[in-house]
Every structure is written in structure tokens, then in C-alpha cells.
Length: 362
Image (tube, rainbow, N blue to C red; front, side, top):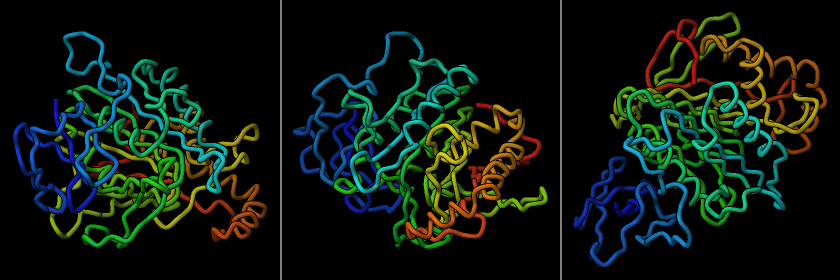
């Protein structure tokens, strides 16, 4: 059993060694002191409080994130594991229509196309009756810890998020544009957002050699929300370069030997659209729809072909529906651009590679 506390200076969750009274943060290097660790009940593995205080997490019922079936494997849910978050912000002024549909579609894709066992997929949506499966900040943090817990060489992990994304001013000097990217849980107005530094520290840096993680992030301002070191800048003629986003401070944003690749809905300075215009049937996120369509239409051979197909799907929607969507974005005050859908899917990774040669697989 471990005790996990938040850094006293930043929101990074830290594992306090048994009996220790202090620990140094890997991000900001601040030293966090705990007065009497023996008097604080231990927390389940890979959990964290939602505040900056060192309080045990209330566990009124067995948590699906810390309970594992019996068996010899240290990776209890097998070599494939996924966390899927669909946040609709129901009955609030932030409500989105397509995010739960995105989550259901992604689950179907993982099970039927990529053979993920249903028991190895954690769904977090407002439709869930289980307290631990609602997309609150507390539960999303628990789920991210669960995703990487006990992973070993050969494992394939997926983190999918569909919901609001945002930005906040960065003062650590580790962002090219001066802003941290964030995800917005269902209770973000009261509990706060999940910052890219924490996401990186939780599901990127711990990954050991031989483990692969794919993130599919359908949100505004999501281009570098995993804080990965390299961003693929692709032009409209099949050319690309890797843009170096490693901070000058020297803080590592890579893994412990594993591989992380992220598809996101748009650049850090762009917004993503929640619309039924693409599917013609029901409301979905444009990025999740274009990701699934690229695979279903046979364009998922390489990462380059995936990204090209995703951008083409959204661009075609621009041409067909741009005037309507531009007017809507203007009314909403989100600043539409010529063509309408103000987003361009992005690809980031912990290491550079040939995007048109590297085969795509989950």
C-alpha cells in the first residue's frame, strides 16, 4: 500500500515512501513535508487526492481501479488496457452533445477492431451509475494511475478523452507558447482542471521499455496536452518536420523507455467542434469521428496516412458546411475561420519517427 500526496507547490501527485516524512517533486523540485505519515491511513495504489492537502481518499466501496482479479500476471487486465472519458457537462452552460457518443464509439472500435477485452476498458461518463465511473477530477486521476499500474513489456494502453479542453498561463518556462494545456473534468468549476504537467507525470514518464501508449484527445487546445517532446508539423503536400518542444530547463517530458503517441483534435491555439455535421446521424466530436473513419476506410496503415485522412475528413466537412459552421462559431464567440471547422488534428510523440513508414497499431 502506498500513500500518495500532492506536491505542496504544484499539483503533481507524489508517492511517499513508507515511513518517509518528506519527498522532492520531480517537476518543480519543491520539498513536501508530511508531519506524521504513520498517523495518516495509507491510500490504495495509484490514487491521489483532488486538493493540495494530504488527506486520505474516502473509499466507501471497493474501487475498480485498485481491485484486480487473482492471477500470476503483474498486469492483471492483460496486455491491452484502456481508459475512455466522455464528459458532457449535462445540465450546465458548458454542455456538449457528442462526447458520450464518442466514448461509446471508441469502446466499440477497441473491442471489435483491436480486440481489447471489454473487462480491460474503464468507461467514465455521466451515464454511469457507479460513483467511481463518473468523469470527475478525482476519478479521472484514479483512472490514469490505474492505466499504467503494473504495465510490462508488450502492453498496449489507450487513453481517450472527449470533452472540454482549455489553457492556463505557465510560469515554469517549460511551454513553447507560454501556456499549459488542460482537460476539464465534469466538476472542473469546483475542483479545477487537470494540467498537462500532471498528465505527463502520471501516464507518460512512468512507462517502461516495451510498453506502448496511444492517447486520442478530442478537445479544444489539445495539441500538446500530454506535454510530449515532439510535435509533427505536416504541410498540405505530404511533407512534415518534427518540432522540438523539449523545455530549455532540461526537465524531461519523455518516458522511462516506453513509447507514447498522441492524436489530438486541434492545435493548442485552436478549438474543436462538437457537431452532428460529420456523421449525419448523431452528434459526435469531429476529431473522434475522423479518427474512427480513417481506420474504417482503410487509411490506418501508417501514422502519416492516419493523420492525413483525419485532416481530409474535417477539411471536406469544411468545404460542404463551412458557411453554416463559421456563422455558428461567430455567434458563439469562438472565432470561426474561413471554411468553418477551426481545427486541424495533431500528432505528438515522445520520439521522432518516419510517420509514413511507421505502421499504426493499437
